Amino acid sequence: MKHKTCVSIAEKTPKRMNQLIKKALKRSDYVEIRFDFLKPEHVPQALELSKKYLKFSVCTLRPKVEGGKFSGKESERISIIKLISEYKPFLLDIEYNTLRKNRSLLNYVRKTKTPILVSWHDFKKTPNMNDLQKKMNQMKKISNNVKIVTTAKTVKDASKVLSLYSISSKINLIAFSMGDLGRISRVLCLYLGSPYTYVSLGKAVAPGQFSLDEIKSIIDT
View 1 (cartoon, rainbow, N blue to C red):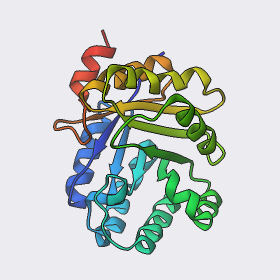
View 2 (view 1 turned 135 degrees about the vertical axis):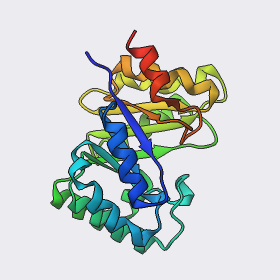
View 3 (view 1 turned 45 degrees about the horizontal axis):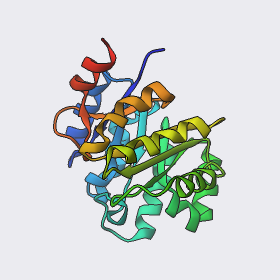
């Protein structure tokens, strides 16, 4: 089995974003397009420039409260997410907290037949195993594609998150921990069933993220 990578692209202009998408896809299976790094009014242009690559793209519009860069009104963010869904990317990453509160958004995206990656992040800690399992069970009611990311304060935290793979039947689970102590989970998740792992082209976009070169030197040997 070939272990796959997804390069996080976080650029401030559509042109630069498109250049890096092309560069990344020459060596990576997928890209994550972080639309929240763009000005909202530039998203339509970015979608048009990158539309032929969207079948290999995980699209994300993360708000500040969820660790992203989007700082506008939530109604504006929802409208942009709906627009992205109409372009039918490989996956559309939407936060569990967003979907839980906005059933109409969930229904809209489902009508476009765009696969949802329902995601949940804890930027402060790693909850106990019971809470993690409960969260996963709630999330998989929304989509078969589930992403759970926590912050590792100890190595045990990282192994706790990885243990979700042993009870995650019938879903595509992406689960790992952020931070230096969680770094190894970004590699091990591949061997436990994650469809891909997130990497950068150079500077890490998230805490503990490996570069594409680093991860390839590990998984291709």
